[in-house]
Length: 514
Image (cartoon, rainbow, N blue to C red; front, top):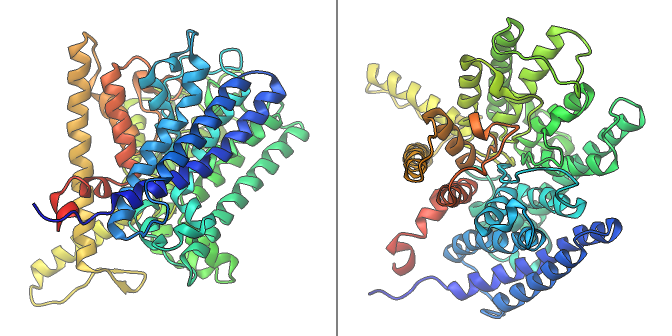
């Protein structure tokens, strides 16, 4: 046996630091609970428990020295521990009631779905009669914290994490890698979080402005605050049972560009604000991202306009410009929501035809940009895969040619290309194996889960999308799956958020011993 090469105490100690400071966010729903007079004790207890857990873990190593290996372990553990403490309010609020969140598997599923910004839910009923304003706000807040990343936030505000911060951001930030915008990694993290906060506040102002202008009667202050908290992290939780369908067309049009922004590499916004807007327009990933959204939107809008799967819009969202506007709005909203893995819906796309649904399923595998809050495989990986395949075709005809793969004029390292292929292959393997397990688990308990429904559920949780099709459609939930399947999907949300490889690395003997 080789010597243990990982200082696990340092990793656990830093997890404790993150959890300790995370407890401060529980004061927000606690204040809301005091205002509405519901679930005050729930959040008071959750706050105390979170502080105690954070302090206890922090004692494992008071003065941690973080290396690359410890960074991987710390990030993976952070999402697990944060999910467990994040589930406490659900368990306490559901204790002694008929709430579906009273079951530990359900509470953990909901918490993991929140922090990983997946947006899948096991809430049987989403209403203020069933759940308090404070609990539903906590549900929204978990996604906002998880969107840019709890660890990236910690790097931004905690000096003790700035040492080794590059390893943390590389392991935790969504996508193949995130550009270092400033000489100090902590400053980079703050730049990203300031952009994230700025977009969130701007959306809040615009949504509430629609309400004040009489264009969104039910977009009161609570909803105007709650929805930006899950738009920018591409999370998709909503305090409304029927998601964004509950709001006017004006609200839906306002949310679309914010979902697009959330799926864009946030480093590009820093360049724009620094006076270099060409970085945005010249970026091949951004152009590909916008192009894919445009093509899929046009295809789905064409199908809907032709009457293929379109249903009558609910009374909550009356048509205001006729069939063309309806078709374009429904197509744009749901295509953007799926590609960016936001998980909102402005209508039940279960009612769409098979071709339209297959286009959305395809979109679940595309994902947002690297350095965004989106999930799934990511646009930049598909760009590299397409370019490398074209290179292979070219070198097959011209074997003597040297043809490196380039992105934005820069040569992509061959190791990075191999890593992209490895990740994509692993992603698809996990998708197919998990689909088989979900179908088998349903058969074990006497349930019938259609293959397409199981595929969509796995794609939606592994890709952190949220809603799927059939029983897990945008107006439904994951409640009826066996507890074992829900725990499997909780695992998929976790490895999907961390993009598989950082988790699998922890399972290799060489990580621990050599």
